[in-house]
Image 1 (tube, rainbow, N blue to C red):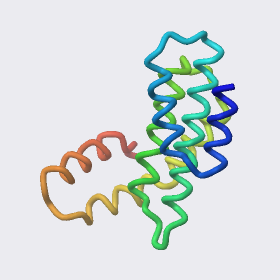
Image 2 (cartoon, rainbow, N blue to C red):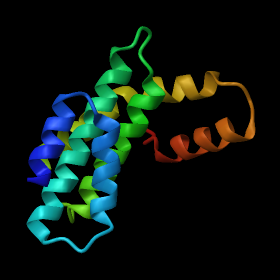
Image 3 (cartoon, helix red, strand yellow):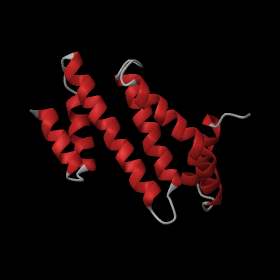
Length: 129
């Protein structure tokens, strides 16, 4: 019932509410299959937030990257790495595509402590080829 409600909320555009409910549910001791469903619903909500950020004009690559990274981390950590491997792969591929633009946007931000820490964190995760 709860998972159905999360899906309905997601379809109604209440993505932030899905994430809030999901986070509170993950603090509870849940059966493994129920927990995995909650994690998947949350990951898909993060993917929707990324799509919204990328649909802006101009696209918000920083926000897109940040929420996709949260989705991937959630799937890997809470899903024990084996949850939705195709989704994880798609998120990873998308991150590879948009991370250079994200880094450029971060570099263009004003120099202050908040932006500096965001830059350092992102640059540490960028693979050098």
